[in-house]
Every structure is written in structure tokens, then in C-alpha cells.
Image 1 (cartoon, one colour):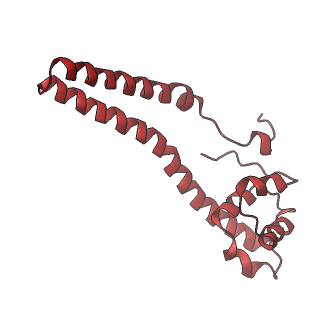
Image 2 (cartoon, helix red, strand yellow; image 1 turned 180 degrees about the vertical axis):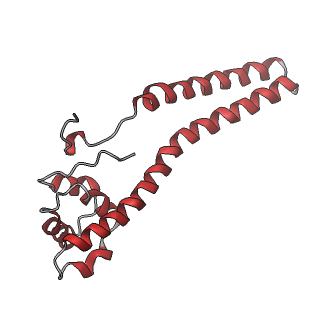
Length: 152
């Protein structure tokens, strides 16, 4: 059974990414950089230097990819959350608040997804009225947490 989710524990950490993949990629980058340096000192203009430089470029590309992959996945997740939350708002908001659904920013929608159904209309009204835009600030305003265990 999962621990009940709240603001303090809702962030997701992928240990294999953080503690294995990233260190291996950085070690590879450092080792390949040294390889280029050592090869350049002893064999300037030779085929081994060209090969070493290509490997360095590949090492750099892999590090960049490791950082871009979660950013792109979170971007897609935010788009899906935006759609889900707008549908949810149509069901839960009172009639006077429904015309304002499209005024919510993506950050507001993403943060408000953690508000329980009972708390959502009043909190959403407060977020709009007070123009609260920061995800962290909105999440900290939530009193009754609605867990999201399927996030990236």
C-alpha cells in the first residue's frame, strides 16, 4: 500500500536515472574528454583523434538527451493534465465560475490537480482572484490533497 500523498512527498524520483544513468553518462563524458586530450597530444591530425572527437560528441549528445527526455515527458504530461483538469472543472465548478476555465494558466491547472473535488471550486476562485501563478504556492494552499500516482 502506498503512503498517502501530500505536498511534502508528491515529487517523483527515479533512482535508476538519478543514481545510475546520470553518473555513468558523466563518467563517460569525462573519460571521453580525457581521451580526446590525450589523443590530441600524441596524434594530432590522425584518425584516432577524429574517432575520439566523434565519441566526445556522442557523449555530449547522450548527456543532453538525458536532461531533455524528462523535460519533454513533463511537457506532454502538462498538456494532458491541462485537458483533464478543464474537463474536471466543467463538472465541479458552479455556473458562475465555468466561464473562467480558460483563464487558468497551465501552471495553475497542473498545481490545482491535487486539490480535492470538494476544495477545488473555492481554491480555484481564490487562485484566479489573487492571481496566484506559482505551482509551489498553489500546492501549499491545498488543504485536502488529491493524490496523483501516475505522474512522470
